[in-house]
Image (cartoon, rainbow, N blue to C red; front, top):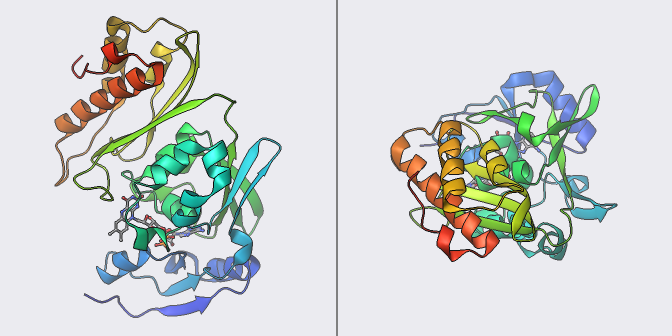
Amino acid sequence: MKAAAFAYARAASVANALELLTAHGEGAKVLSGGQSLLPAMNLRLLSPELIIDIGELDELRGIAVNEGIITIGALTRHADLLKSPEIAAHAPLLTAAVAHVAHPAIRNRGTIGGSLAHADPASELPACMLTLAASMIARGPKGERRIAANEFFAGIYETALAPQELLVAVELPVPPKNSTHFFHEFARRHGDYAIVGLAAQAFVRDEQFADLRLGFFAVGDRPLLAMSARKLVDVAVTPKVLSEASSALDDELAPLEDQQATPAMRRHLARVLLARCVSSLLGRADLGTGASP
Ligand SMILES: Cc1cc2nc3c(=O)[nH]c(=O)nc-3n(C[C@H](O)[C@H](O)[C@H](O)COP(=O)(O)OP(=O)(O)OC[C@H]3O[C@@H](n4cnc5c(N)ncnc54)[C@H](O)[C@@H]3O)c2cc1C
């Protein structure tokens, strides 16, 4: 199928993109890498009147680390994140996660801003933003605002961005030195959207979690920062403690049914991921098998 007819404008600057967005409102769609927008248009799931191509706005591209904050421009491509030494050094969870986003051809065009604005609940990067306590920087007709990741994702393909706003960058606090991470997803093939995934970051002291952030994806209509992680912090993690955390996690999940999995299967896989994550981060092989509460 082909897309319905649409008008096309190449934005000359961020200000120009914002003018166009303000003038056309919900009839317009921003085009970044086009890896989600164009398939949706070709399937006639979306039929915008106007496409505003921001792909040449170099000011929205790049990675910088200053005073404990990593700033990533919205147009930074997945491929750039994957090979960035700054990201590998300061946010290795992101490097691990991006390797699972689609395939090289898609990573060469797809952007972090497009992935976050698209807000697919099975996407890797939105969950990483929750885990890494990111802020999204949105610019609109009234200026700039920062939106915490836990307020940004509002449902399937829904975010807190207003139709006249552009996502211009994300900011991540540099995790404390000696933080560790875990990333794993179940997918039918490497590069497919996840059936269930987990992006976790931890700080381990004296064989206990001093901090643990668990960002699950494909377990509901949006990524989930699991509060059940608290049950594992500042305690000696025994199989019983893990089992209680696993039950608490189950209460937080609201998995959906699709062609890939039933809700029950997603719940099971989330518990398996939790056990593997805790086992891996604490270096405790005895905890890694517990799937059932
Ligand atoms: C075969 C295939 C497999 C894929 N597998 C995965 C996968 O495993 N994991 C995964 O996460 N993704 C996957 N994707 C999606 C891919 O990662 C996209 O690159 C990404 O979701 C969107 O990025 P983009 O730059 O291409 O955005 P676009 O397609 O250009 O835009 C996506 C949406 O975001 C909006 N938008 C874009 N940029 C901005 C901005 N700066 N401000 C406001 N709104 C904006 C657009 O209007 C549109 O609604 C896959 C895609 C394909 C085709």
